[in-house]
Image 1: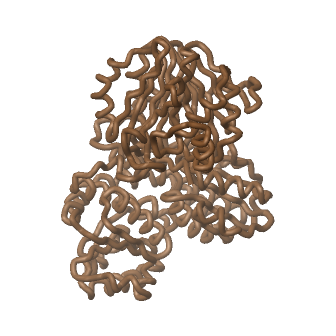
Image 2: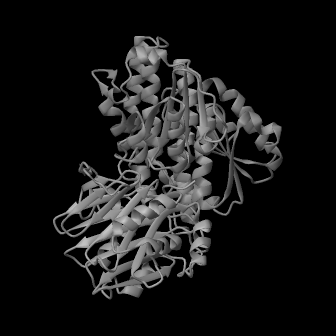
Image 3: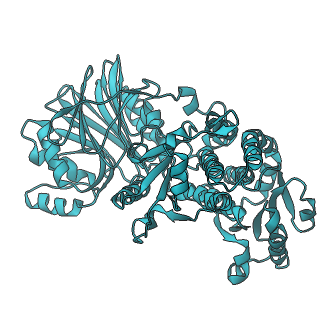
Length: 608
């Protein structure tokens, strides 16, 4: 959700903080602020709106001298977007400054208690409670005060803290919300995500829950809740700076759409060796795979949609029963697990709060958990029994594209591998499916060559009020993702329906000129879906169809048709989603919206 950056070192801190915050804009925010500790004074400047406002107020940081500071971009939870509610927050005598990601669940009880002790609150935020609580417990030892606060605060949080009496030191702590520490010869950093500090260092420590960091210009020390010093392993980030920049594209989303061939290739190619799928990271023997009785996929948003696709593919190829749950529902529906269930938790960031909680619940129930994540060292990656990384590289746009496609590719590998091990497919079919997998990147690239026609079509419907997506089987799962892409960046009301459900209610919404996007790639369902399209057209609907090359008869029904290359029916989702991603992008562009940073949304949802 929100973004945190901190720096202490030999250079001026404010410009580094502003630069780091700019790399976290994709996480979503409505205000920003920085605190600089200089000459025994903590100075805070905050602004509502985009980061450029804060840049102007601080003269690009030059008006705030000092070599130690913390910065924050806020996405409002408690209290409306405003300068007062922006971070950082002071304690009562401005000797402590705090930035915070997450939610303090018991903040009202703490606030009432502190108010009775004479503390006054200026903001509506839960974060100000932390600043005053630190003030209440601070007796000269920051570690002691922080540890006491951690035992009394409930919820999720990552904190960056400055103490006026310790002018060379930043303190940080983590519970639930992501936080990393970067080290370099010219200074040290804290950040809520890697892109914020990638320009300055690739050497990072991943902070675990309930750990405390004490950091000065030349040293970083880690402590547990008992204030005992602990040792951490230093990791090197493999992403390069260029991967986190736009590279000449107008928006990150367009760049990442065009990176999909590489993302899918990087997910697949290293795991196919000598014509065989090798998934050593799963640490599952062939006998272990045969013993699995059920698969449960848990995820949120687009990752959930990859799970819906995977259900069709896994059940079709392996004949294993598959359940797909929204992580926020899985936690509360009292799921029934049976022996030898494999739980697969999917998340781009590896920090999604509901998905992480679902993982922990599965562990409490004694189930094995496989994580499919993009971010190395993330919480889900560390807590899962095993992890398959998607290796998609940094994804900056809030609307996921390449991470979604890489997740699909990993699911395909699992499905084909399990199907062979369980004897559901023979060697010939196994070899054919592997060849189809290897060709997916080039086929995605071929679709991207037709973007001008999609752009022209999108401009015609940029003023639409309602758009519907339909499909059957795998095509229905693609419709779910196509609809989500459109609504989240264009703000057009959009819904996806299984095509066979039209006559059970949704068809009443169709009127003259209503755009209905149909995805039709499954041979055994082709005629049935076309019949649903005819029902739409007879009621005045306008039909845009995505189908496979060769299905030219569909032009008798569809008004506009987008063709994708032929592939195995199990893998069509990786191709049919691409025109829908481009359609959503160009509709948003035609409306003049901020494609990469849609309103009210954040890249990584780290609170419930």
